[in-house]
Image (tube, rainbow, N blue to C red; front, side, top):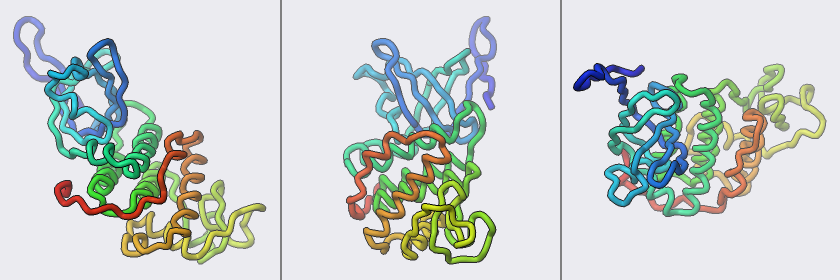
Amino acid sequence: MPTRVGGAGDNGAVPLYRDDAIVLRTQKLGEADRIVTLLTRENGKVRGVAKGVRRTSSRFGARLEPFMVVDVQLHVGRSLDTVTQVETIGPYARPICDDYGLYTAGAPMLEAADRLVDAEREPAVQQFWLLSGALRALAGRDHAPSLVLDSYLLRALSVAGWAPSFTDCARCGAPGPHHSFSVATGGAVCARCRPPGSPAPAPETFALLAALLTGDWAVADVADQRHRREASGLVAAYAQYYLERTLRSLRHVDRTVPVPAHRPDLEA
């Protein structure tokens, strides 16, 4: 919540607050300013005006780019807050934006987070930590970009209340493994609950999906490319069904990118 900081003169206390934040998106405002949408750790989604950041002399313009994790101070406004201070926590924008494969995997993460945390100023601590960790793994080149993306989407949807099942039947709870998948039902389905036309993913694809959901990277990292593609298609369909709208950036994801060289300089 905002804390009041004493100010000089007759204006009295000025409502300021400080929080860790992830920059989700930006848009131009006037000639030199920018509106910044932030996912903060304690205050949920916040929109603020960063004044003068598009000038080359700006002290913190580069810190308010999408993918950056920052420590930010804002002044409470009527409709939009005003950014007054910014310090870098996770410098993820450059390594992600400089690599096409990383960027196309990262963009849907920011888009999904923006939609999953719909209301402004509603705390979403788990969503913040999930996205922060996913961006760290992506920029640090810990795993193949598409695997990081799919793992993030499954976990973020689970936190939002749409946890899929990849073992027991999503409808009746019958123990698996099962051979069919239904997006509308919530994942794996048994033969009795299987809706007509349900796809039948390979057993290895179900194993990969379960590994991505639980963070079992020992299994996920060695998955065959064919099963990765099949899993990605199911994750994309699942995400867009429960978000009730298309993630536009998903269509541009480069899923042929192998595991990049590790970046130890970005380890937390």
